[in-house]
Length: 163
Image (tube, rainbow, N blue to C red; front, side, top):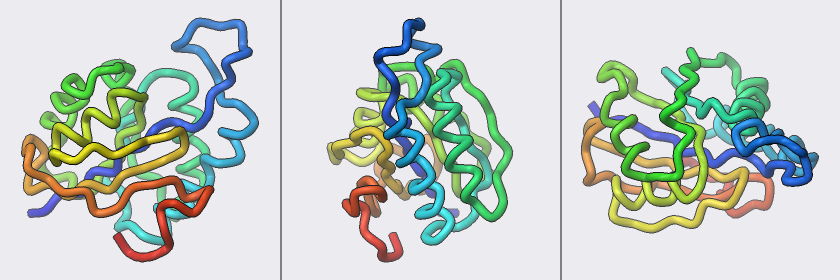
């Protein structure tokens, strides 16, 4: 069974907020752009079986704005281990995803999301805030996947075609 991993980098955060990194909220631009991710996912992907979201405030807020645009929001697993800047840590998380989940979104941080895509596919993909990459894998632990599509819906770099 083919698996689809939707790697999402959280939306733009507010660096002026006087809080620790983990608690940093979204900036106004991030709150505007994140719903575009959800609309794109709703129109171009199969329904998600699971969303794994970093426990960082900005990642949770990004997911909430995405989920509000989906016809049916999937179960969500808040994962402290997704609050990482290591692609290898994210690859370990992906390898432990449930085998019966066909399409899963992971909402995380850079440089981990860029490294994750490279680890899983061998291709480096630039992941600015509010972007996503659709990765096809033969199984969750595989490191021989392919990038179907990547970019940012809000600025048109993702495209409007089917991945």
